Length: 153
Image (cartoon, rainbow, N blue to C red; front, side, top):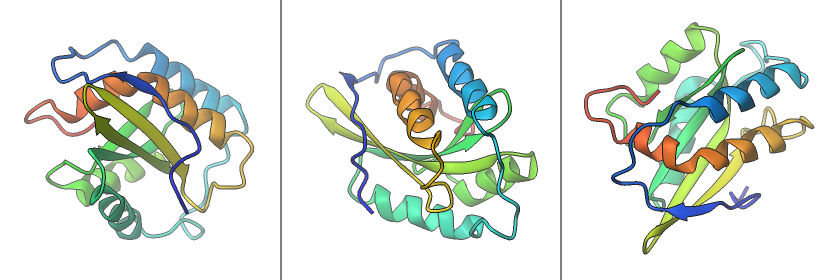
């Protein structure tokens, strides 16, 4: 399954300061209100499988993140993190639902963003808008991944 449903370009935010996250919180509320139906544990693949899928995708990308939806916010597990499996397990145990992958590719001074829902959410009508909306925050998401000593969320 290819990551090419939506692209977003913006200048590379390597010196970008962290924003307030208001748009990410907005799309998280939309995610929750628009048919939030978290999958039960038995229907979702193991977190280790999701992390492996992220790592495989990251082999040819600048950065890949798992978007984890909560009632009022979205958190991320980054391919560049030191312990992505532990981070994802912690978020799932806190009530988060892994929704899909965000992939970022760097081209000169711009970054292209792509998304792909996990197969468990692929047929949900709201998921395309939710993940696509997260790409409007490309600079903030990349900046979060680069904060040293802070988990990727």
